Length: 312
Image (cartoon, rainbow, N blue to C red; front, side, top):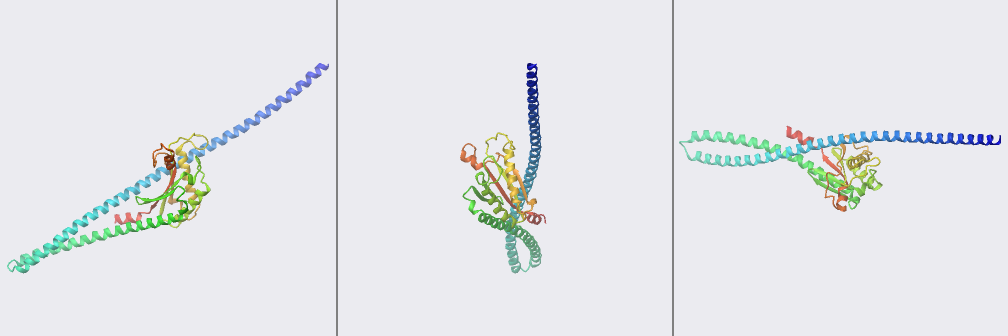
């Protein structure tokens, strides 16, 4: 009887242990299932963000190509007008010399007076027509040149304002350059981000806010933010798959900071990631790879007025 009681007690203890183990496993399973669902949701969000970034990149590149094409066409038009102006000025000088010669012949010849008068009249009419055409071409050239000069002055003033606002950061990996009718504000990785991160550090946020204040006062300037990396592959863990992801997320982070300034219209701003494919230097040295890890903010003036003048 004693043995039977002992066996009963051990069976009861064993049953309670098995039931307890089953509860723990079920709880862990539910936790893991919840983590899996969370990861799946985050993965879908990242895929959508990547698709949006790619769409922004395509649209921004198309806009940049159109602006560059229009600028090239404008330059060609200006060159043609300058050549025509020079040719017409030479024609005008030749006509004036001919006019003087005919006038002298007319005055010195009595018998050929009527013929010379007719010839002189034709030359005067031709001269007047050439002068009118030359004046029209000169006026159009002057108008286009005035618009270009205004844009150049605007860019120079903007460059000075940006340089003044960011003066305290220019020894910390920041440079400002004017080329191809645009202002390039280049910021090194160390100024903005920790390695492999797209979260802007406090010093970088301060620089972006200062730039945003200048942009708020220049509402006709378009803002393109480009993220660049070196060619060192990422491990693909976490939220970042590769350098495309990192460069795009960094560009988007800068755009979001700029748009915290409510005086900057979102329609003026675009972001794109360029990954490792637009390097400043070969990626064979540590210092050169550091140069390539950068964010470029490209400021472009509105050229609608210039294109309207050309079309007219």
